[in-house]
Length: 217
Length: 218
Ligand SMILES: Nc1ncnc2c1ncn2[C@@H]1O[C@H](COP(=O)(O)OP(=O)(O)OP(=O)(O)O)[C@@H](O)[C@H]1O
Ligand SMILES: [Mg+2]
Image (cartoon, rainbow over all chains, first blue to last red; front, side, top):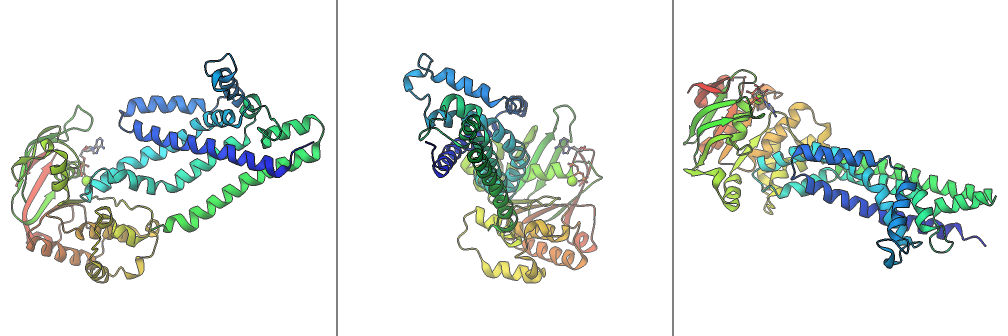
């Protein structure tokens, strides 16, 4: 028996949005922490993150698998083949991408906003809030970029999730499974849903960006 | 409030000095003009006066106290009385009005003086602009918004970097009048400029010339 498309979709969105949220908050924290370090080190670290963007998701899946398999260092947590394992893996998949995306903008804007806040005789600590406000469109799209990345990846979901129906099955694993057993119609429907969610997000962002954010008071 | 620069040196790259042993004093209210060729160090000097940059060597004294040795709380108290307006305007996302009131907002100033703002807006003929996104302002409109944003704060020391570029004649005259008013109320205004308007020259308390990071004439 195959699971309903709706539950698979909801599970996918749930897992990916949490993974993306953790990746988003982590890279924001990393950017804020690195902004105290000297530019030279930050460039090196950011270069590493940039290089990590290209690591195949299967390799990250393998890494998380080795961490959590019963004899592994974190095996006692019994996370393998749970949605939590997928969230952790997808967080690692999304992190380098969302960090890299945020980094350039964050740095370009940071000094300008700091100067602006000080030049108006305000304490420097006000700068962070204004910086976040200024970067809102960038931050939003950073989140959605990492969400789409998490939604669309297969390697992690398959290796550490296992595509267990009713438990860890997400859109990508379902597509792979249904295709392999020749259930093409169902697979195509799943694929269409996956693509339309991504497209809807991009369109929503565009509208938000142009209609609302520039006027934000 | 008075500010004094004592043997101030400044370098961006650690090797060549952009300011060389600058000694300057702004003790009394007045319009102080800073002139000098491109790259002579005017902007750098204004940023040191506005406490945005720390001198590489030398001291900045505020009412005889060394600013860069103050505790954070005192520094903030001093900063709250100083404003600086950049040559190239910085505007943030939002409407022209949001940008105009930014300084007040950042200071959590609940009693934003609406009538003061409205009068300025009328005076500079900016009524139609206020609801426009800041990104859609012309160069002169952006410039005047950033200048008024600082004026509204009623600073004791106001440093203006090339305030008249992009401004039309009418608004230039208005601005010079308003700056003179601020001086009458006891503020020190320091302007870096190439454009020496006649009105400005007659009202200037002091004209300082900077060449190659050195003051040649006070
Ligand atoms: N961020 C920076 N990094 C390195 N060098 C800089 C920087 N800003 C300015 N300089 C150098 O410092 C010198 C003085 O620059 P500054 O901007 O203070 O001159 P200025 O008198 O304001 O010139 P202008 O009339 O063109 O505005 C110049 O030689 C410039 O190249
Ligand atoms: Mg300059």
